[in-house]
Length: 353
Image 1 (cartoon, helix red, strand yellow):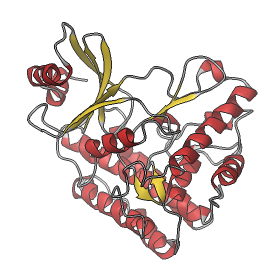
Image 2: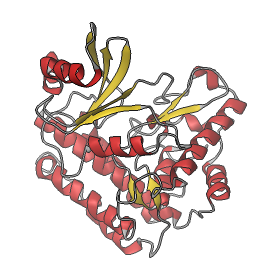
Image 3: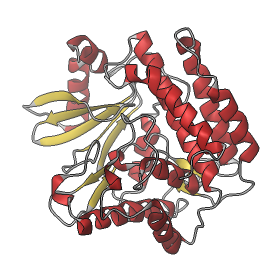
Image 4: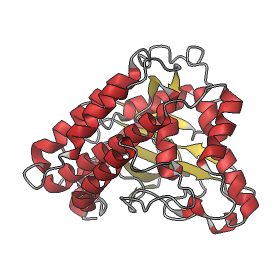
């Protein structure tokens, strides 16, 4: 990543002045960009003896409602002290004059985030099963939050949420296509949009939802057995339909014998290994804990692929505009069309998950 792009993310003097005022003076001030994640920017900040993480939107123009880090902070701050594992929040700043955008700070958590592979210490059937159980238990804990008691009663509008999800991600495609369609088209998206609107479930439960619940947004503490210690990346969280979280997890959680992933850059294959619970076992554990039946599974799996494609298309626009330093973004030139074809095959019953 170029120094020029890092300079667009942080104004050294302004941030130091802000931290001095809010957290007190410190002799040490250092920061570096953490490469993990592909949406909001994440920077490790050392302020005196405190190890912090700063989250802010990427540099440049963003789609409406995307990259809302102050909303991310709000929900993480609200679930402190519940059964939901999250890092400790520190402060939130909506003054764009400080670093050029809103941002927030949290305490830095330590552990492993399963991205391209499982942590080596979890490579036994027993530990793999426990990892899967920790994942589904954390998701259940999110959906069991009493959002009224947590002060999140106005955090979203759960009625009609699922239909609005289709509309929202359709709009994100439209935003991205303003630029990417000059490079190549993805016609399958229009067929998918129509299919999803036709198959939206009439009713759904109302809970807090994470919005991007998958393995590479989860951190496991050092040591064994696996202990899920932090859930990250809450920028898409709201009050809505918990089955949308299950659909996304199902897209990323692979069983032995599944078709080849259309975007191996985004879909980790290691849950196919011996010992990991199958998707069906995860769903059963979730249903037993929450009492929420995972109905209309095909719809939610197609919606998850559609949403992932929209994120990828927004990444590709940012790449074309020069507003990103992520090596994943240019891969979405071919990755999104492959994912769209996969989602359409799933919608039409040509692929079964």
